[in-house]
Image 1 (tube, rainbow, N blue to C red):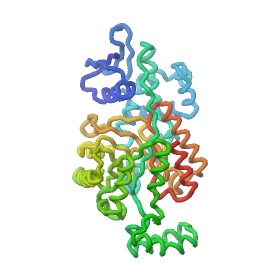
Image 2 (cartoon, helix red, strand yellow):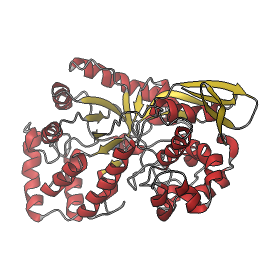
Image 3 (cartoon, protein in one colour):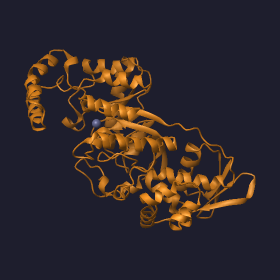
Image 4 (cartoon, rainbow, N blue to C red):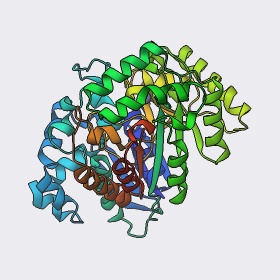
Length: 444
Ligand SMILES: [Zn+2]
């Protein structure tokens, strides 16, 4: 058992310690309050040996930025990984800095403070990844929080080498946001014409364009299997062939209007789809509509609507997992809204523009309520990679080979730290054999 001494009012430091030492490391903690500003850590029964670390408040934001800039250069990181503390002294002579600042950096990232002050937003109100420090320094694909936690753990282990090592719970988790389940099933004539124009502009072949009207008519008259976006059974087949349970996130409201898709979850076609997912033993979550992550009343009504349908489909698990449409997430508001509505887990936190570790970790952690300065019961299980972040022209625009390599790198980090490689693949992004190949690469 390890013994922590910290100020009773230092809820931020206690939050970080609970995550690293209790949630992740599964060590038993004995927490004592003192009137000192730092955190001291010792081993129960060995009062003479203690380590002293700076508390979360030990660094100003500018110092946190300086620390990240100084330590997390690609060169330094490869040495940081090398094992043991000399590596850090060796890198920059910054051991004292790390002892002083590791907890502050971890809190800054996990709590969302790093994002809350960003005033640059895109047209969906999302913080701009390009203005985030981890992106500016090209270290979004390094789990910085996990690296710093490993440093702290190594330091504590130097006091007691036989502290338990938790089992590695690395897992690949395929998830699917149901934004556009069908291309034509709910598509009215005007929208069909618009889709033809969009397809023509985006370079769809003449042959496919010529076949579109017939296909649209057939799908609209009930032949749903012909719908170009309908590949749910194939997705389930693939996931099952790798022994993976998938999560499907359904939209159950239209707070943003058209942007929330063209389906009504109560439509019999949607119910059949939901039932197929349930019958095959996969999980259902809520894909909260565009404005729901900022309004508990809207979000709750969507959750209740989906729950009711899920029960009709004989899915008796509570709808307590959520991901927000367009990955919209305001760290000052959303954690509280999700928690108020009783969600157990959110899996929204990634940047749409780029894959990687938005909060610096591949592991789950309780979200922090910035306004009321307290941890929430809802767990964030960060999203690591979305297909369009990798290959879309407006985002990273990688070739399929480069995308596969990037996925391998992320998987290796998740494996190393026993995290979850959460991938998001939309059914409408699985059109060609190459698309399916990349998807399989992501989940194997
Ligand atoms: Zn979505």
